[in-house]
Image 1 (spheres, helix red, strand yellow):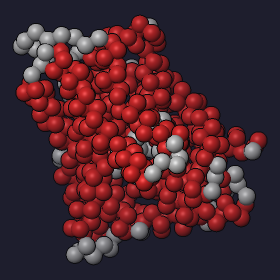
Image 2 (cartoon, helix red, strand yellow):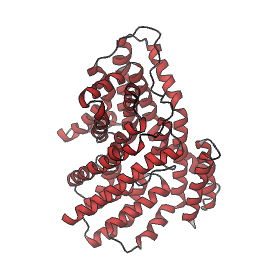
Image 3 (spheres, helix red, strand yellow):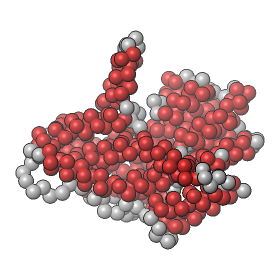
Image 4 (tube, helix red, strand yellow):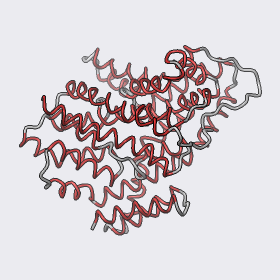
Amino acid sequence: MSFLIVILSLVVLILLISYFKVDAFLAFLVVSIGAGIALGIPLDRLPKAVDEGISSIMGSLTLIIALGAMLGKLVAESGAAGRIASAMADWFGTRHIQWGLMITGFIVGIPLFYGIGFVLLVPLIFSVVRQYQLPAVYIGLPMLAALSVTHGFLPPHPSPVALVALFHADLGMTLLLGICLAIPAILLAGPVFSQTLKQVRSGPLTLFEPKEAGGHYGKPGRANSLLSATLPVFLLIIVSLVPLCFPDMGAKASAAMAFFGAPSVVMLIALIVATYTLGIRQGRSIKEVMAIYVDAVKDIAMILLIIAGSGIFKQVMDESGISTELARVLQQLPVHPLILGWLITAVIRVCIGSATVAALTAAGVIMPLVTQTGVNPSLMVLSLGAGSLFFSHVNDSGFWLFKEYFGLSLKDTFRSWSVMETIVSVVGLLGVLLLSIFL
């Protein structure tokens, strides 16, 4: 019965948004409260669940998205994004620029959390699209497929690292096998699948569109443009490597590294640097730079609310215990442990929306089976990682980031983003099963 309620809730949510044209945030709020009542959550607990749902997802994303939007807007307004796009065209050629973006997404995605990588790289996608008049979804999806795969498969991302610890897997082996799976998954879900999306029309890509400047400003050079736009990547790499190179540093140094390695702090430092290198140094006043930042935040206000709505729905599903209930039912299925782990994670992912919640919930259920059967723990980590990416849809914040930034209809977001995530997930499972033959 609980599963039926979840399915009906998702159907109502989609109808409200697509057919009745209800604002996505309001639709999420109404459907989440209705689902909570139907699933038996006490009425006095529901308002708190709504608050916790918003805080749980926005607590980690608000600063990252807001600061990332400011940085992206300045990168676009200053002409830095155009410089980077021209450099990529020179390095890879206009015909292969999609591959250049995909490789960039993979490299950037290894050290960066998905949210940071998304808001950091989307301005580059839009710049390439405008400069060379290319289809936005066709050009951008391979880069975002690379980001998604690194988020689900590869340490040091939170979910893979947590799963490695839970299953006592070897971190280095998991990373190596994850890269082996990531390459075919990205290629099939990125450049190959995107060939079918050339006709998908995106909305006006105005979020990072440079405006006509009233005064005369200098244009940043290629090196300045590239370093200013990707500084968060280098900062995160540095703060990740320092503890490895100096394992015996004191408590104060460790605390300093933890502070400077926090994603929101990294983004703030990068924004401060870019304010000078791409703003003041190019002849803009502080007031003019701040005006750019105000415009950037106005542009993403509704995106933030929609993501908050998806957090409410996720929290209601968590409160109801539906994920644990589904996992226990699926555990009884007579299938291979690696397939079962993937299946449990995929079903929870579809119902809950959160990749991390899906993977960690499934891990608790599948763990005794791993011990009994002797399955390679690294492969189980990757199987659950692949399952956690399955069919991202309306209850996933990543779905709404992609839809709203690219200005797509629900139908085209399902057709592009949801299918891409499903391809990544299925290819990941097939790769895990192939590797299990030899390991």
